[in-house]
Length: 212
Image (cartoon, rainbow, N blue to C red; front, side, top):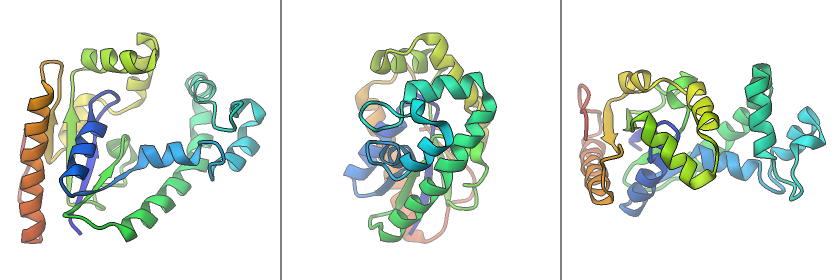
């Protein structure tokens, strides 16, 4: 199956793009959603996280206390490595299992840290970045999460720089502060139709297609 790696910074709108692609017939695997399932109440990662970080890491509902963990990894960067050592193998396993069962016009892997991981370039046919200016990212995330701008910018600082993501992209969908829902819909649809064509051809087109 033809494979697209879809990524973008926090607040870029990549999840909305992924939802649209799924509506149009793509098979979508969202690694962030897998991570949330693994760290939810009764999630498969919770016993190992409890063992690694103690009861303080677990909320009253039995899920990972995300605020506690977010603060911990920012204050102690080495703790991020411990967290990733628990989560990444499980996320990888569940991603592979879902990919083996996937059916659709093509397969989309939604990976927030796709560029940062350095492992996806050879696993997908094309990388698509949903691009957004930093101020819009902060405004969107603050509106949906209630995090402070400083906290959001710390998260952004832990992700790849905008220029780094764009340099890795074969395709770009612009979703900045001036983008309307109709425009995002049209840009995503344009990419969907392009990928349908490439999937039918059986090989990626040569060279990048920037931006939509």
